[in-house]
Image (tube, rainbow, N blue to C red):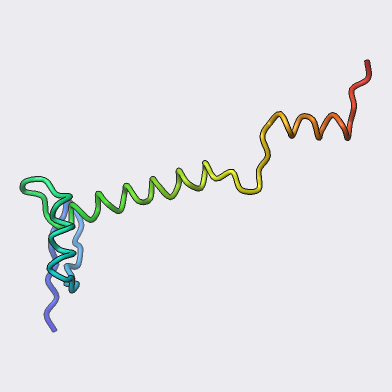
Length: 82
């Protein structure tokens, strides 16, 4: 088995091969810009997916209540002295 190591910056990365249908390869290529490699395209798509997952996590309202509702609950439990 022969391993090819491409050089990227100051470190070596192992180059691998994955099998894709021609249809998926064309879909991935449609996200690319002139001169951009599949590695570049997939890295960009991955970075966008990570940002989207973080956004969904931070914006998920499940298990949370609006601040006004929380204030009302708090006031019921510990009313202010007037």
